Image (cartoon, rainbow, N blue to C red; front, side):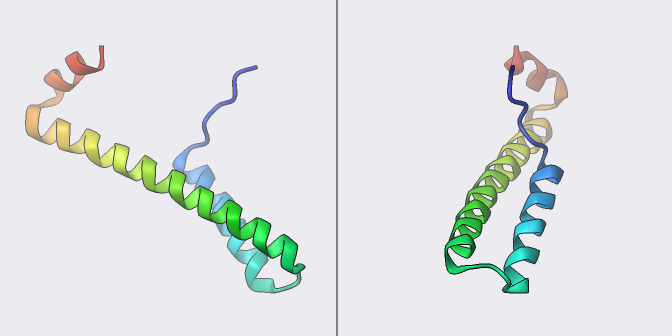
Length: 73
């Protein structure tokens, strides 16, 4: 079974859940550290997705959509 990459929106929702959990302060130190690590990993993935989207926008703006389609193939 192929694992589908989560969308930006899905990852943002996951991050919100982690933040809410940490803000409640009802978790152990170990669980807090694990959640914090998961949050950092999500932030890194979100940052990469944003950078990829920005690069695509730059390509489309600078070279036009037709040239971009040729580069994708």
